[in-house]
Image 1: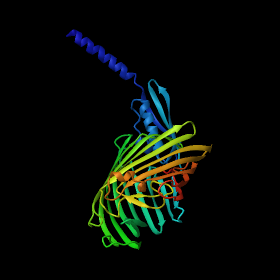
Image 2: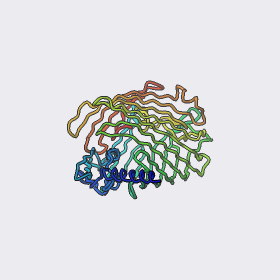
Image 3: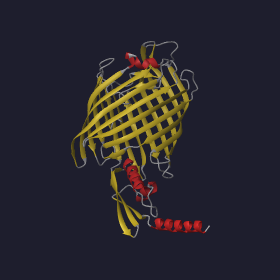
Image 4: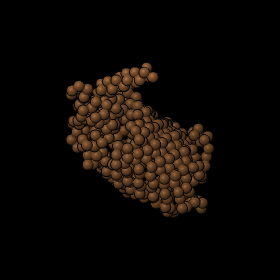
Length: 421
């Protein structure tokens, strides 16, 4: 009994001594920020005054800061204050965050479409994104978006979206094509939840009106020439993100899974389930190179309908292919490119890139063998340039030229703001 008491006494002394020797954060200070509020940075940081000093937590906080649109670069410093108390400094280099967006798409058959937008990515100094766009793709469209991922806490936020999209869309049936005016007017609300640094969830509902109006081309009595259907879309998104940023360079892995269930009030546009996963992999190559890849695998309900949800499109997946040139109920698409910084000085960098975009689709009502059908496979290599402003968020003006080597000889330029993926 005395022996046990002695052991407990010794253990207690050892525990108290060890605890007393732990390094503690006396104060967390924020430096370099102007628009981004210090209170917001402390709100999302895991390190805080009175907590044990842990370098892994500091490094995680810095990675989190570098992912914010308002932050061009960040790093930390630790200084001894007295005894085992330390002052921690988070040093922030801010981005300019009121950004116009421009996307232009052309092909060699004179297709031309563009989207212009303006967004504030750091509204109220709280990392809130607010803005909208105007699109001209034969018809006019617009959208308004609000996203506040840390509105309520470090873990919980909210997003609101409204858009009215109007485009000319090809509809494929009986080995023929017709053109329809397509409209999608929607209202969406999403709950944003980030339980930890690497994992993020979104859950929400989207109410929308979907319309098709025949314009020209082939007809079939079984294919309606006019449709107007109200729908509800239930959405869930899971993201695993372990990316690390150093100005224009990215390294690491990210996976985004998107699952949607769409109800319908019409058999011509039946309810369906659609899901896809985007796998992103980035690797630094030497001091100036960056290899980037994105693999998308997606499937939907396999209804034999000319209004299938997956499309082959310049802006979405295959650079140079044209604006919505095919549709399917399944998709496998690989985009891979090598980016190399050919010039860099102070705030500016110029990158050149060589890419290959390749994909295949499952035909509506088809089977998995469709992915190997030569008529469904598209391979488009190409070259591009990136003009990068290192102090303005997403200020990357890109020009890509892709040309087809399979199933036709289309080619075209794709302009835009931001990396393609």
